[in-house]
Length: 243
Length: 141
Image 1: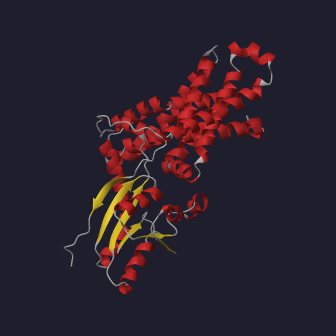
Image 2: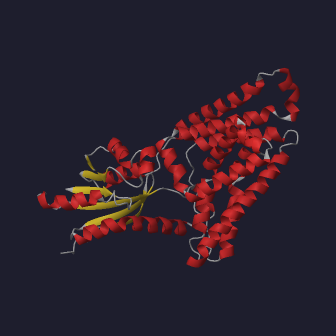
Image 3: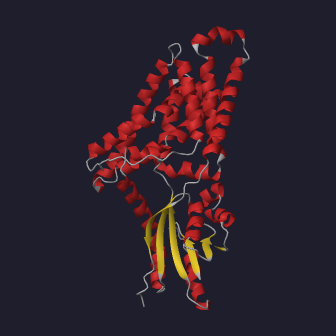
């Protein structure tokens, strides 16, 4: 276990996992905070705590599933393609969804249910990314999760602010997801004969996938580039009757 | 004259408000003051699938009004008339947009807002506003 912490490869992989977690988990953190808003004051902290705990637990279970699924032939191929798409989507500007007709939860268990369901739905991209980056190393996986989830829960604005200041982060994230997709591709059992025959594919495939995500993301983003205007929520005009 | 004062609730940001209050004494006419707080758009498309819009807006409103409290208290104490706004978006862009919409003559912004560390790492909103704005920006030190 201790040797693990001393190898540089470990820290490179940890960095990858934390980066993927940070870029792909922001929404989950916001849901956790907002789902508990309508709870009575006394239950709010409890709701957040159970929510974060449940979300981490669920994430670990899902990632384990993903890791064991990925051992099957052809599934790494599917996973790699999904990751390429996730990487491109990260670079593209956010689509606006219409508002659903959702009831605000006012009970502790209702709020926790919302958090867990949201986590289940919204962590798929994250789970695939982390499973690919961890390459089956469980210690790595749990370590990455334990570092990044509290970081997000603590400051959901952190990532937004960083991206606003350094927009290239989003491209770096897309390239990273592409790279990880390429790494997954070269370990696909079904492609083993090809990979063994052309050994240079082991570095070429990840690099090509990273470039592909960057190019596609950049091209599509140019096409849909538009500014989302700020919305005014409160507008109270000057009180002129004041003397 | 119309001025826009963006605030984030920090004491540093409120120095812009203090400056405007102090400047009333030597200005020919009392300026029309617009206070603005911008909340980061935390809830993106996916969040709306699970949390209803009212809850999201309540959160923004609560945070925004809390950020405006100190500035409003100062202006009330000085007996000045003002309007106040809470916008949701990216701070610098939203500030410049509000300045255009309200057709203000000047943006009075504090050079430093929340947090010294994040200022060092992230640069201040003020410098971005100065860069984006097409009207005069007064940086209050």
